[in-house]
Length: 89
Image 1 (tube, rainbow, N blue to C red):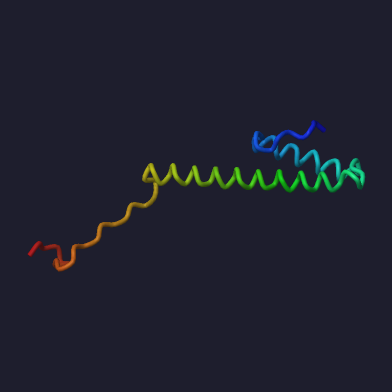
Image 2 (image 1 turned 60 degrees about the vertical axis):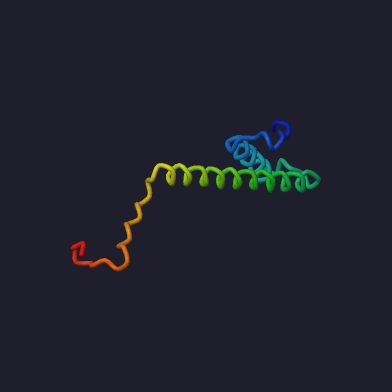
């Protein structure tokens, strides 16, 4: 496994790849008890990073759709006091 990269500069892909490496190492008993706590803590940090990146992506996508008016446009309200049978008077 590569040395721990600074979390703040990691991409989503890098974080998920490191999580997979940690999981494989734990599953294959390549992590001794002394290392286990460090791996679990690192995994927790990586999971938080991934969740944060997913939330940020979701917000950005929602914003794009809202700006491009891709949502169903609101129907105009009928003016109060006007007849609803289609006549102006």
